[in-house]
Length: 455
Ligand code: GAL
Image: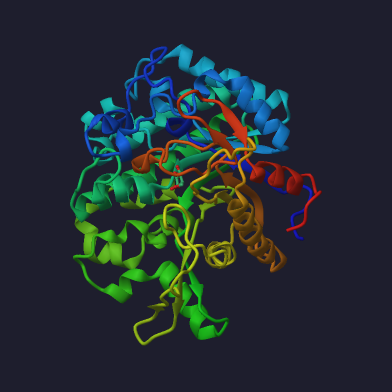
């Protein structure tokens, strides 16, 4: 197998999904705190108020991470724990909480990988117009500065923004995630620009304060999987991966939020795809050229979140979807199991952008429970990991530069609009008591990392 000794084996979580302590020690509220209070927004009326109670379990969680043998742990900061209003007043207890967590990780030789923003947007900034306000990138820059000033001496690895495709696409376009809005495609483009600019400004701030920083982002990589290895099908998959607009050719199409080139091209190539200039030039700011310089500030790695892909074949229109056979394997959330995505996602991304890749998320949701023998027999997750990691290892063999893998997730946690319906963790969590039970997959992943298991 092709994972060398420096390969960063990791796992990931996010603040709102695990911390709980939502109203403690001066934390300000976020759009997710508010969204969960609305009826019928989240499955079963679940909230992140308690979640995994990680806010009160620093030592216990770090021990779980250490015993797993992880070299790297990816987690996000709650913006409003640090700046309750998003900007302005700083909450020292919030900063102290992460101080303690970071120090505990470092003490155990686990490298912190911090995500600055994983969706729990300050409600006070939401009221000021959120990402639609052209000041929003300055707010993000201010928050970043507070954070890197404090932790930059100890933390080298940073990710700016997690999955803008999802928090914009579901939060502001479809309205199924916080804050639950359905804005026009014109607004969405302007927000996209402001989010990208926030990313670029954050990269600059991190460089300013952190010596030898290792900086990336964590974007969804929605990949095409060629139906066969023919050049035609490969081209079709490439078209799906980077050129969906030209196929649809419909200016009314609003669900472009997941189109890779909308997010990756500005950051990696310093320009928007042509369809943006053609259809939305009125929605871009006058400072566009200067902004693009900031947006495309050099990063050290591309973080890709990959769970599944679309199988496509070539057709006259560019590509055509292949329907899955009846009974095709799906996850608890009904996502198709397509391990090939962990080959072709990195393959197409590396081919286009030639930049080191880290898989910042990948994992399986399941209906796990504690069996009568007291164990959690999540064989499906082990199988998922074996097949996906097998394809990732093939990609590395084919000289795709992939340097790390973060399993989503360390703990079962609050799965956004799906509440606690499904479980993604290597560790089972009782959401009433916070009690943790290691699943079979935890031990399997531990042995793989230790080199005691083959794929
Ligand atoms: C990603 C997200 C994570 C987690 C995961 C599983 O979209 O970044 O927070 O929820 O999916 O659905």
